[in-house]
Image (cartoon, rainbow, N blue to C red):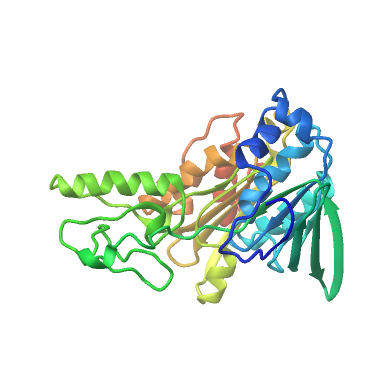
Length: 335
């Protein structure tokens, strides 16, 4: 359908631009699709829980030669799931340094697809705005695709949001039926889903399969990357947990300086009494790789002191993790 208006409710995915073509222009400059799209006005609409997907694509576009186009976020906050300190610095980098046009607190009105352009009407801060674009990418979140599967007929319970109810071993209410991945509780992440599948196979084989949902790493593949595991500062404050923090900037890392990637920092949060690591948050080069050390440490119940007393190679980006651990006790070596 070329003409008409669409209701962009979070349950719908409406985009005249296929994801295959969209990611083609973002990731592969030599692709013919990229050559066609880079000269057009690409407009992105983001809804709650999907801003990381949109941000990954937007952050890549300037590096592919595409002019930055606006992205609309329904929520009034940027990267609400991330640690506030990380989100604040990421906002500065992406909007000031890279120049992304991200608009928060936007309410989408109508989207009309015409023969020559797509007209988008939205409201921000009480002001109505209308803009025209050649292409529209809509990221509206995901829901478990469990409707009309007849799960109730075999005794599998589904909650009001469509998620299949399971116990800590991913067993449903029906005997010998398990469920894993995006249709059950926990983050909708590929690595979480695959590990649940392994755990279920182990359980069926009589072994002790287990996935700790508290220690699932989150990664946003922007440049610089964002990664975290465990709890954020705002969560600890809301729960009244006493904690200490150590934060080390990549500008003070010799390896980061050699790479020319000095934006961001590593933050470690530890219990004020036991020193047990409660969360680690990274904004910077290869954050997706660095976060694994924190996941291992937290899974084994390590303290910040444990990481501080482990020898890290020099020069390496992992030294930032070491320094953040030292920083929990205000014992930086390089600051």
